[in-house]
Amino acid sequence: MKICIVCEKDVEGKSAVPIKEDAVIRTIRRVKQFFHIAQGNELYVCEEDMPKHMEKRRGFERSLIFFGVLAALVIVLLLGTLLLSGHFDIGAAVFALAVGVLILLFAVVFNYAPAIEEKPGIVGGKKAPLPEALEPLEEKGEAAPAGARKAERKAKPARK
Ligand SMILES: [Zn+2]
Image 1 (cartoon, rainbow, N blue to C red):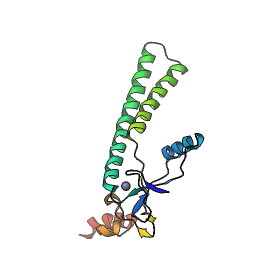
Image 2 (spheres, protein in one colour; image 1 turned 90 degrees about the vertical axis):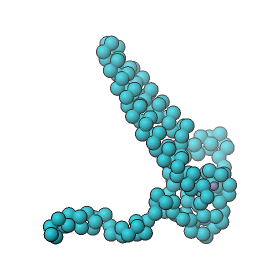
Image 3 (cartoon, protein in one colour; image 1 turned 45 degrees about the horizontal axis):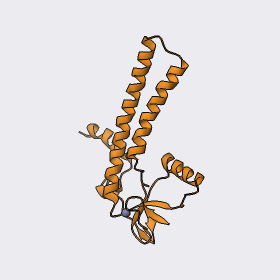
Image 4 (cartoon, rainbow, N blue to C red; image 1 turned 180 degrees about the vertical axis):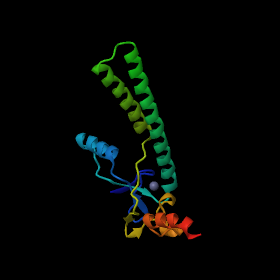
């Protein structure tokens, strides 16, 4: 079944964008297969839930950065403390790393929102709209490829 991950409804025949299969999704799927509770659903975000999902995704990206910095700080502090107190060894380094990984895992478990495919999905023959953040460049009058734009910018001062 093709279901929306936000409203958990069937998106067959509706506009929806498929989500990206990332490491978290694959892990969840594997765990579910292990326990024989996998439903084999294809995961989408439907058109109505797109704004909600994009907001959640942005929140997840922000928290990942926040917890990433926090994890790095904690690792440095832990290692620094262990070094200064003369208790530093391989076990201490592994412990510090494990604490960092746990902090990051915390961010993923509580805020996870998957990325969506950058190409619009077609469900039931209807073309799904791209979310605002992913609008094709052509529509904003920036049809020129990045390389051409760069060349243009470089050329400008010389044109005087
Ligand atoms: Zn939905």
